[in-house]
Structures are given as C-alpha cells and as structure tokens.
Amino acid sequence: MYTRVMIVDDELLARNQLCAMIDWEAYGYVLCGEAEDGLKALKLIKELQPHIVLIDINMPLMDGVALCQYVSEHNKDVSTIILSNFDNFDYVRDTLNSGAVDYLLKHRLDPESLLDVLERAMNKLGKSPDTENMLDSAGKLEKGKASTADLESVIQQLAQTEGSALLDETAVAILKPYAKNTVVLVMQMLHNVVLAEKHIGEDRSMFIRSIIELCRQLIGDVHKGCVAYTGHGSLLFILSYPEYRSETPILQSIQTFADKISQTLQMIYTVSVAFGHSPVCHQIDKLPSYYRHACDAMDRKLTHSQIEPAVRAAGTGGGGKGLAVASPAGYTSNQANSIGSTPMMALTIRQEKELLASILICNTSQIDAIIDEVFIAFLARSSGFPQLTFLIEEMINLAHRVGKKMGADVHWISVTTDSSLPKSSHVPEIQIWIKALYHRLVEDIKRLQTQGKYSKNVEEAMKLIHEHYLQGITLEEAAVTIGITPTYLSRIFKEETGRSFTESINHFKIELSKQYIENGNQKFKEMYHRIGFNNYSYFFKVFKDIVGETPHSYAKKYLKNK
Image (tube, rainbow, N blue to C red; front, side, top):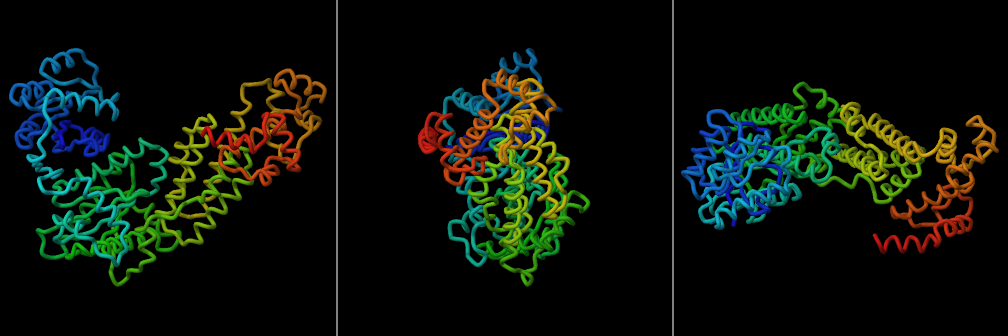
C-alpha cells in the first residue's frame, strides 16, 4: 500500500536532494509529483490527489504559509509538512495553525526525521492509502504498471545479462512502455573516485540517488524513459521515441538529452560525464545486445588505447560530455565487457590485508611493492576506464578507512583528490599519485603516534624507533642522531615513557603484531620477520611477556569477541 507524496519547492537542487534522501518505495511511499511554486502545486494537488505534501516556506507567486492554509481549508484528506531554511517563530506559528503536521529546518533534515514526520502525517489522516487509485501523470506509479523499483531491478538485470541472451517475459512486460524506437544510453561519471571520497557510506548512496533523481527529472515524462544505477559510476538509460519515424531525429534527441544531463551535472555537482548509446532497437527482448553496443561505444570513446582515450575525454571541452555511438559491425564482446560486465575485484583479499598491515607498521617500501603488484595485475587484465576508476576508488577508500581508524585527520585526502588526482588515465602517473597519497598517510600516522605525548628529545627518539625498528636501532645510535648523550636520553626516556629504550622497541613491535592479527594475518611464523624479530621463538616469548598470552591465544580470543 503506497502513500502518495508530493514535493513543492522552487529550488531544483532542494527537490532533488529530498527525492534522494530515502528509498521512498522501500518505506511504502511513492513520489507522485513536484511543483516549483504554490500556484502550480494547487493544480497538481487537484490532479494527483497526494496524501502528503512537503512544502517549502519561501516560494514565488504563493508562499508555503498560504499554500498550507489553502490545502487545510480545501483538501481535508491531505497532510502538509513545511520545510524551511529559516528558524522563524512567526512562520512556525502560522503554518502549524494552518494544520501542518510539523515545521522542519532543511539543514537539520535527515532520513530518520523525514521518515518520522511522514509517519505522523499519515497518522494524522487516520487512514491507509488505496493503491487502486494510484494514478500519477508524472509516471512514478500507475495502476497495472511497474513500479520504479521494478524498473530499476530489470535495468540492473539487463546490465548483467550476456549480450547474446534475450530478456525473459517478465522483464519484457515491465519494459513494454518503452518498446517502440528504443535506445540504450550508458553514462559514465568520469573520475568518480572524487565522488567516493566526498560521499562515504550512506552519504554516497544518497548522492547516487540524487544523481538518479536529477536524471529522472531531466527525462521528464516517465513514458519517455527510465534510468538506474549499475555500479561504479555508471547509469543505464532506456529511452523510447515512438513519435519519430526515422533514426535521424532520434539520434539528434539523444545528443540533446546527453548534453542537457552533462551540463546540469557539471553545474550542480561539478561532475563530468561521458556517454555511449546503441542503435535504435525494435525488439525489446534483444536489449542486452544493444546494451553491449552502447558499452562498446563508451569503451571506444574512453579507451581507444589502454591509456589515451580517457585523456581525450577528460580534456574535451564541456566536461567530457561527448557522445559516442556504437556500430554493430565494429562490436567486439571483449571491449563491451570491459564496461558492461561487473568489474573484477580491484584488490585481492591478500593484497588488501598486506597493504593494511604495511600502513599500520608504516613500511613505505612494502606499500610501494604492493601497489606495484596491484597495478601490474590491472594492466595484465587489459581493463578499461571504469575498472581504472574503480581501482583508484578502492585505493583511496582504503587509505581513508585506515587513516580514520588510526585517528588521523583524513580531510586532506578529499582535498588532495580534488586538486591533484591526475586528470588523464595514464596508469603510471596514477600509480605514482597513489603511492604519494599512501606515503603522506604514513607520515601522518607516525606523527600521530608520538606528537604531543613527550618532550622534544623523547618524541624524536620514539620517531626513530618507529622508522628503524625493522633493521634495529640502539640507544647510542638514537642519542647521536638527536645530539644528546646516551645517559641523558636513557634517563629522560625512562622517566617519560616508563620503559627503557629497548623495552619500547619490543612493545612497539608487539603492538604491530597485534594489528597484524586483528587485520586477519595470523601466519605467525611469517609475521615475526616483518616486524623486526630475528626468530620466531624470541617473538613468541616477547609477545607472551608483554601481552600475557601467546599469539595463538590472543588471535583466538580476538576472533571470538569480534
């Protein structure tokens, strides 16, 4: 049973963000329409008969207070919720007196508070919506028609279907409204690693939904097309042009539509995109093949050679908005699969574990070796541009995750990604950039481990321990480097840390071994030499002396409590 919800706000970005805040259908709601001012809202309310109307307070022609009052007087079966950027008592009083369920500040609105006020709005009506009357001219849901969730599911299924396969009967039935003069359009967000760094976790999901909602708004009439996110910065559109009899106006319309999306995303989100589209399809069950054609067009645009095509796309005027069209004669399944199929895992589990451990022990040479191995494997797979962006995204997200876990300020990662991430797809250049990112992260972690805890001399001694624990460093060597006598260093070191210089070296090594264990590396007889012990027996003894139990016992207990 879906509850129809309408949004009234004069700002496109505000409407889009609200649309993307939650998965509406998953919670039993459907967005039935949008209006940019109060007068248009009145017409739509009469036409669409929503159950709930979300209203911006400050709009042209008719503001939110007046609209709320009108709805209260003439539409008793509609609940209103007021949204505003202003915490103004008069506004609050007037709208609540006019029957609004609540007055919410936009900058404080989150999914939880939105769902809460929607539930209260339905409770105020005291009835459940009747899905038999769900008729929506904006096309979100109609009686007997597929829901947005159904369409998204079919599109995502299409993206995973072999090019030679046919769509099943259920998928064909769902896509039937788009069965005449159908075109598959693929959109790739360029360098979507920047988006990943800015939008982690739930924020990233909300950002992607926001992009999708904006694209739906630009499509306009739902009978003209639908869109879904297929992963790794890619969107898949199915567009229908039944009004045209020849392909020329269809291709012109596709170009105009792609330009419009590109310009809008660049203006609102500073996101650059590129497109590839299929020939016109007249048999909708064959869409998987046409999707591969569109992917092939995208692949040839971005990856003419392994490296250069995305350089051209990134450097093209208009934010990489160029449109590529596939030729069935030039189609090769391998090229298409580099875009159309699910990318291979960027890092193996082993590589991720070893990279994690190397960061934790601040071993930059080991980090470099793992990064080299990852990129060599990437090149050996002959992967394309989307896989490259996925790899960079994974590498940046891992650095962000580890830095945050270690208590470091990771904001600079986002800034660095925005300002210095290579704009081309020249793999060696990106490889060097990734290494520099990890080297800086290691320096931050080193600094964090000692900063502000001790006097300058002891802090310098601790830094030397962290830098030279693998090859070993003596008290005398540290004292010479710092420029003080070994006796003085020994005394102040013991006073400030509570341990001798040698004990501190062993404690640091054991802390590193614990981090290895906690990150899944429990091959103790391979671990000890990585943290600077010469033999396993001595490592075993020192671990038990410091931790109070054996490495095996510690690992077993950690996994049990994890």
